[in-house]
Structures are given as C-alpha cells and as structure tokens.
Length: 345
Length: 221
Image: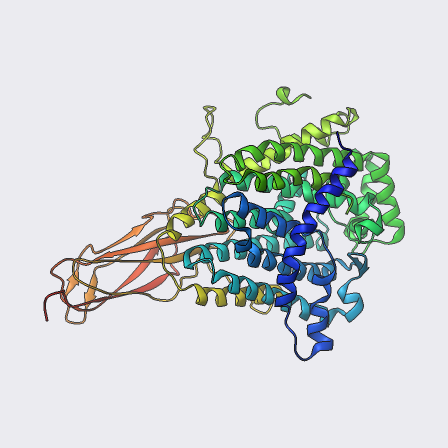
C-alpha cells in the first residue's frame, strides 16, 4: 500500500508527462511580434509558469481511452490550457490577487490595463490554436469540438458573473446548493467537463455517448474546486502558489464560509454578514472569518465533503469508461480522482 | 439524520449546515459530500421526477437534452465551420472584454439565410440552422414552420420543407439547438430559385429566409 503523499507525487508525475507533451505545442503557438514588451512577452508569462496540466491530461487521456491517437487531441488540449490562462489573467484582476503559481500576478507586474489586454489576446489565441487543430479532425467533429469549447466559455462566464455579483451586491443568503451550482459553472465546465467531452469526441470520432462522461466530469470538477477552496485557506503558499486566505479577503462564498456562518451564533453571524457586505475585507475581518471557520471545524468539514464528492466521482467512473477502447488510458483518468482531493497545490 | 431517514425532497444541506446536526462525526460530512454532488450531477444529467409516482423520467435533463439534440443534428449537418469559428472568436473577445453589449441578448439569434442547392428534381437537400435561448428560462413549444417554397413565376412547392426536430419542447434555458431543415424536391419540379421564410412559434424575433435552387432534371435540357 502506498501513502497518500506518494500517490500524489505519482499522479503529478503522470500529469507532468502530459504537460511535457502539450507544452511544446503551446510554445510553438505563442505568437511573437511587436509590441513585444507590452503584448507578446507578457502573453507568454502565464503559459510558461508550470501549472498542473490537469485539463490537457484529461483531454488527451479521454481521447486515447476512446481509441483515438492522443496526438489528435494535442491541439485541443493546448487550446484549453491557453484558455485557462486567459481566464486566470482576468480572474486575478477581478479578485485583486497578488500571486499566481508562485510569482506576482500579471497585473501586479504589468498593470491592470496591459494585463486585461493580454487576457483578451490569450483568449483569441486559444481559438486560433483550436481552429488550427480542428483542420485535422474533419468538419463534423471539428464543429462539435468548437461547440463544446464555446459552451464551456459561456458557462464559465456565467459562473464568474454569479460570484462577482454575489460579492458586489453583498448576497449572503446562500445555500450550499447555490455554492455547488457556482462551482459547476465557474470551474467544472472548463476544468473537467469540456476537456473530457472534447477528448472523447475526438477519440471516438464523435460517436461515443457522453452522458456518463459528463456525470463523472461534473463530480470530478466539484471535487477539484472544493479542494482548491480548502487549499486557499489551509494550504502552504509555497506549494499552492497563491496567497493563503485570499478567498476570505475577497469575500468568496465558499462552502467553508457557509458552514461557519450556519454554525455561528447570531451576533457573530450578524457581524460577519455586515463585513461581507463591505468590499475588500480588512485584515481584522479576514482574521475574524478565519477564526470563525477554525472554531467551527469548517475546513475539516469541507475537506471531508470534498472526499465524499470524490467518492461519488469514483463510483461514476466505471459507468463513464465502461466501454473504453483503451482501459489503461481510462485508468489514468480514474487515478486523478484521488489526486484532485489529496493534492497540495 | 441518516441518509435513509431524510424525507423525500429534503435538501442535504439543511442537515449538513444545521448547527445541531453538525455536532456529528466528520464521516458524515463525507457522506453529505457524496450525496450533494450526486444530486448536482443528477440534476444536470437526468430529468426531474415525473411528479410523484416514484419513477424517474427518462434521462435527459435540460442541459444534456440540449446537447443530445444538438449532436443528433450535428451528425447530418454540413455548415461552414470556419465562419463559425470566426464568429465564436468574436463572441469570445467581446464577452471577455465587455465590448459587445447585447450579444446574445435576444431570445434567439438565427444564422444567416439558409441557402440550399442546386438540387435536382427528386433530390433532397439538408442544412442545420440554430436557435439560441440565452435566457435563464426555458421556452416551451418552439416549433419551426414555413409556407410553401415559391418561385418568381408563382410556382409553389407544397409540403417540400420539414424540420428535424419538428418541435423543441422545451428549448432549455441557456442552450442552443440545431434544427435540420430538410427540403424534398418533387420529381416534376420546375428549375428555378425558390424562396420561403422560416418562422418559429414562440420566438417571434426569428424570420429566416430559406432559398433553394432547383436544377434542371437530369436527362433534360
């Protein structure tokens, strides 16, 4: 039996092999030109910071699992990773984040106006890469892949709008169902659903049924985001790469916060709700929220909750890949269920 | 409260976030997590209860149903991929930059005119057009229809046009559905350019010209 830490390292090694294959494709597609200093150089900044590569791995492994040559999904995987970076640039601005993958965020380095422009450029680049790769897929599958890509973008934008709207308008009367719906929209669609569906479409030439794949992807994505929220509060910055407790400072409505609020006494709750109505929480407020979450065991609750979601994902995996043409490739995806909840970054 | 003790329809989080219930062991949090996530996945990938007899409706909740319909149409269509890629890119840029106010604001956004042919008499032509519902609410009974195809000399092709699916009931919220228009040219049809307009019940904004060129029959002319 291996330890959890060993398993995490093993899974990260697997992800690294996919990242090593996708990265040259991304690098090859990064445009150069003028103005280099204000556009093309910062455009390469986030893609060159090593991320987990989870999305690319899911896309390529799903393609292989359904009998395709995973090289066929390389372009789509690269496009998804580039789109992810586009979202990150804008997300960091919207959240006022200072750190990303262990370095200052792009807007901290370049200023908000230039960073916004770079985010736009990365989004366009993702479509360029997808368009180029679609030429090899045939018109029908190419169109299906494009539909998946744009659908994921719309859902992500909707989720982001929901979260930003809750914060701007001081919405606190939320249930955990609301939180899960938010997770589905803002994170799962482009982190797990689109990569798995696109990989499956490419691998099966558009023929494989997607229902069970989608169900698995929803669960995997929820487990991933729940863990991300936990790491934001309880992770180590060196490994996590972002500022710890940034979500509290930004007033994000995480499951931990909802859990703590539900368990707070009335005066405590009233004070926290009032604080959440104010944009940009002060240090004292962050400390108050952290204390509340700590006293009510909300981090442990969320961590265990995420493991339960992962249990559901593991159970859904068998149906999703029951007809996999290449079980070893499917097993790569199955192994990632454990990884998404046990990772430390 | 154990899972099996929860009354039907009672949401998991009422118990999970209940201060009294929360005194329980953390292992329950894991069970809550599993249950909650499965509920979420069920909402997305299966239909709602049929309303009380205990049976579940056929799988095919709004999101998935829209996807499945679209895939069915996709298997037959031959639309212009590259033009749509450009459209998609423009939409993406606009959405991210906030520079295209009103994009997808309308209840439906038809593609360009549907142009088919030339088709020889006795032949069949097909093409997919798109109906969008960017709104948060589903639209019931979305039904495309059109009058006869008519030529400039007044010749009409009656009942030459059909739609697949014939009705979207409903068109789910925040979804886009492909509808295939199928034109069957009668064997004795006169060559020429025929025109009609596709309208869609419950989406009055849509008026989509449908143009069909009928070729000279083989072995004539």
